[in-house]
Amino acid sequence: MYVKAKDHMEGEPEFTSTRREATGKQIALNPMVREMLVATGRALHPVAIQQKLKMAGITASYMNCVHALRRLHLEFFGSDADQYTLLPSYIDELNRRGHKTNIELTGGVFKRAWIAFREGIEAYTPYHERGMAVDGTSLKTSIGGVLQVACFRNGNIEIQIVGVGVIAVENEDNWTWFLANLLPRLRPLPAFLISDRDKGLVNATKATAPDIPHFYCFQHLMENFNKKFKSKQLKALAWAVARARTVLEYNGAAADLSAMNESATKWLQEIGKEKWATAYSPCTRFNTLTSNNVESVNGALKGIRSLPILDCLMEIERYVVRKWMENTKRRIYGVS
Image (cartoon, rainbow, N blue to C red; front, side, top):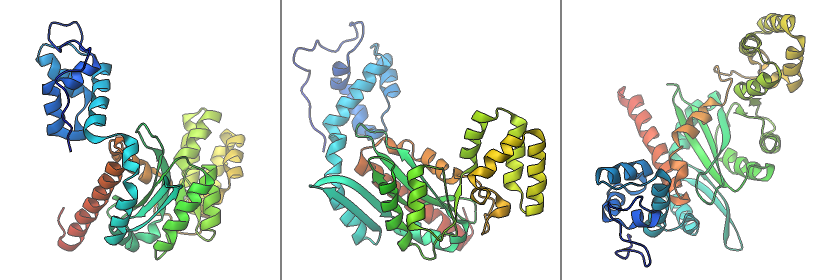
């Protein structure tokens, strides 16, 4: 529901094109800007406001447009914190519609939530052998927090979300809670998990999935590798070691790396070659050496992560359903 504002704020000069620069308060009260918000909702961007005002002969800085938009969001949509009070009812509705969910409150205050989407689970099941990537990414609201994401890659090399979690911080307890809720809902279990080396996530995986191989994203390993061994040639040789499909190929690639820098080979092997080397994997990797699947999803959700939490989760739900519908249509009818 939209809230009608006063014509102008008390003590604030009228908003005219003759003033040197419009303030955030004046921009927020301008009828033209308010009409833009009504028409576009949360999609309205400060740059669009700035350009519209410029066309009307009004000078406004980008930051004043940002401040104005924050004021308008608070007035029209409520605060980011307000939406957390609505999460229990949303979680109940998701359960009613067949999704798997859980929410924890402490003294009536939100602590964390977890969702496995019905369509995500259905899409995952035929591709469990391709493993699952997990990662945490920041929520971009005034409240902050972390969005946990679990996803997989289907037969068309398309990435789909299975489930998400909302937590305050990444730590062992929150990752254990997420995986302990998610994994029992997946049958069969994923052939492997892949992630970065976040200590809390590594320990949580050991506790909740001791029998599922847990691989480390080689891209993340290379970021640390590059800090220690600043050489494009060494990096290329290290990738060759990771991609080698047989022990014989691995030994040959490792020998090439050692010939150039023995310390580089030792650094990789001390991590545990079973954690990153294809040749020493106990299961088929399907060329999955990185957690780029989930990184790509995090990128796709970048704008969504800036929304207040209820809007954010509802948009993710729509994203999951849309992907499921697209792939179901393609599988049944052979069309895109």
